[in-house]
Each structure stands twice: as C-alpha cells, then as structure tokens.
Image 1 (tube, rainbow, N blue to C red):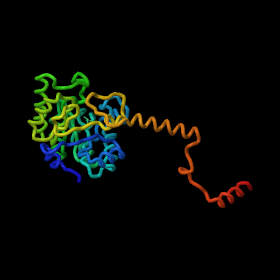
Image 2: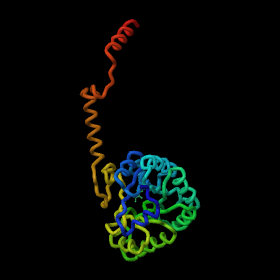
Image 3: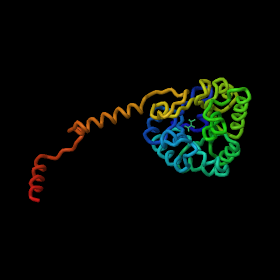
Length: 280
Ligand code: KIV
C-alpha cells in the first residue's frame, strides 16, 4: 500500500518509520521490495552517484531525472524529492516552482528542504502550493560552511535550543515531518517529544520516530568516506570488484562465454553456410 502524508504522520508513537535513499530504478525496486516506508531521492546523489564533492553541485534537472527513475522502480512507495541548493537557496522565489517539478514531472509525493536563512519563506511558499514538505535541520550539508563544516550540531545548550526552535518553526510553517541530521541523541529526543509530526534521524540516535540512511553508505557501495553513524549492512563495492576480477579472469582463460551462455546454429545450417562462404 502506498502511504500518503496522513499515514506517515499517524505512524508517530505507533511504530518506527523507515526511510532509505534511492537514485535509480534497481535500487528503488529493491528498497520497495524490502517494505521500507519512505524513499528519499537525496541530493547525496551528488556525492555517492555522480562523484561530486558537494551536494550543492547537483542540479534540479539531474534530481528530477533520477526521481523519475526511482518512481518507475517503486510505484507503491512514498517518495520524497530532495530540493537541491539551486532550487530554493539561490532565489527563494523559485522554491514552489521547483517543488512542483518533483511532483508533476517525477511523481514524487513530497519534497525536502534544508534549514537556511530563508527556509521558512521557502516552506510556506511550497506548502501554500499544496505540496508536502519535510524539513531538514541539524547538519544541513548545503550550508555546512556556515556551520563550521560537517560536524555534529546542537552540542551546547544554546545551539541545541536553536535546533528545538527551528523544529518548532518548521512544524508551524506546515512541515509534515522533520529530518534531524547529526544531532546528539538526547537533543533529538527533546525535539521528537515536542513535535506533533514525526522526526526522522540520521546520526541523531534512537529516540527519533524514524531512521534514514544513505543507501550507498549502508550497502558499502560508496567508500570514499563513511560517517560514524553509518552501520554497514553489506560490502557491495568489494563484492563488485571481486565479481569484475572473476569476469576478467574467465575471459582471459577462455572460460567465458561457455556453451551455456552462447547461441548455437543447427549443424545442417552451419554446413550450408560453410559451403556458401567457400564459394566467395
Ligand atoms: O541527501 C540525502 O541523502 C540526505 C540525507 C540526510 C538522508 O538528505
């Protein structure tokens, strides 16, 4: 069953919500088959798929292109399109128009926006347009430079209080869910207890209403760096390299392709052909 926003909100206090990222058809299909509640087409696409250094570099066109593939692979899962930097932080007036692209072009159910100076303006514009928004606070990679880099946020009482306030403001602006990235577990607990909408944590401890991981991290598919909060459930990058080495050896030794992976021709047809060729 494909959830809607009310279903997701109703899960708060009943059971934990699961969310994973996906960027293409096969990954989305596998995530849906596993029964994960929500797929995020994250702008982490920039790092883990496109090999770029910063999520700020991924474009709206690239995000929509990948979101379309994800929808093809997961027709029955709630999908959130992650608004890239250029979609709303360059000019907040572009927020609603770009959020609409995720819904109408890619078939997403909602969008996600990161906290920044004009985040509430952006959320209000998108919500006014009838689009559901997930708010993202804590470590917000699109403005990581202003936060002192990729560091845990809300570590002292003052900073934690500001996060609690941001969550409250996002909720008031109409966000249906708040994502908390790299926040101390007890601060995430406070935010979760105060919020009427669900919280989804990544590096935010066990007290959130749900959890999200970047799929390429948890599968060991992206190994340029691995944050402390990632639990690895597989080592796919190693498995892929092993498979490619095996294939290389098979081809070199003439073990592949064998009869089982080749197409035959009937012996009488082959004979006919040989005669024809001899004539030439
Ligand atoms: O882009 C992304 O993958 C994210 C993570 C926090 C899940 O926003």
